[in-house]
Image 1: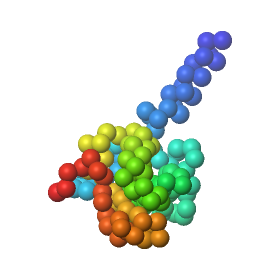
Image 2 (image 1 turned 180 degrees about the vertical axis):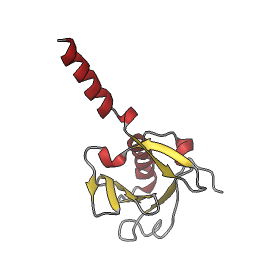
Image 3 (image 1 turned 45 degrees about the vertical axis):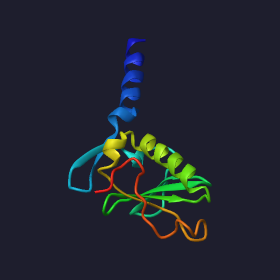
Image 4 (image 1 turned 120 degrees about the horizontal axis):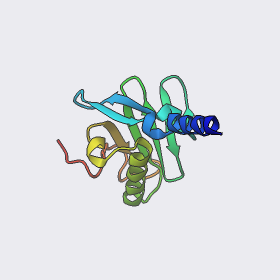
Length: 131
């Protein structure tokens, strides 16, 4: 019985997000620890370089391996509300604070067919001060 309990505990710890982190390089070369996104459930590996982390009717969040950057695409006409929801989800997926997120390479925008008023811009994360 004790051996079974130990095996269950080891399995839980091994599969816990706390022990499945990865380190990526931020904007200024700093190392940032995030959840290992390649081991998360419900991701879609598009090819060898792109991973779709979240794809909803309102927004999508993807990761580009070669330069370790993230793209958030707002797919709703309600740009402000969808932006807030996508940013919240972005932090949850990566398991980081907003301060840590500000050091990541993140583009946030919307296509012209969704919202011509906001299309073409890189708005970044709303909680990060412009540099």
